[in-house]
Amino acid sequence: MNAFPIAIPAGCEGFEDGMTLRDYFAGQALIGILAGRSEKTEYPPRHISERAYVWADAMIEARDA
Image 1 (tube, rainbow, N blue to C red):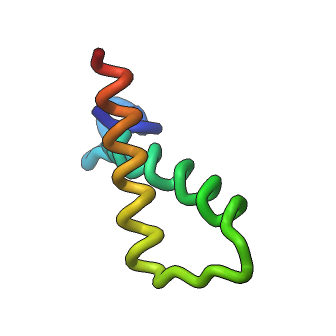
Image 2 (cartoon, rainbow, N blue to C red; image 1 turned 180 degrees about the vertical axis):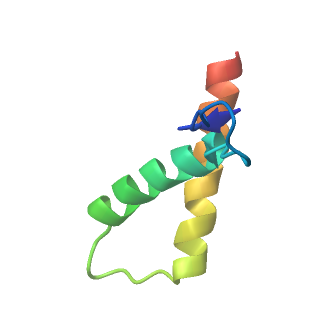
Image 3 (tube, helix red, strand yellow; image 1 turned 135 degrees about the vertical axis):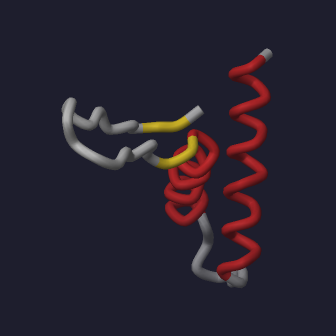
């Protein structure tokens, strides 16, 4: 499933599926993670990104339940 697909007018070539729902959820989770983090605790960006996808996967699982 994709978020924000774009309808291409008839007669035009190409298509745009938008971003995956997982990527959209991860982006939203990332906003919350970064907003709630303590300045005293430093996490590597890769760790934070991976956590965002863990949350995204949980949201998709809950959505599909």
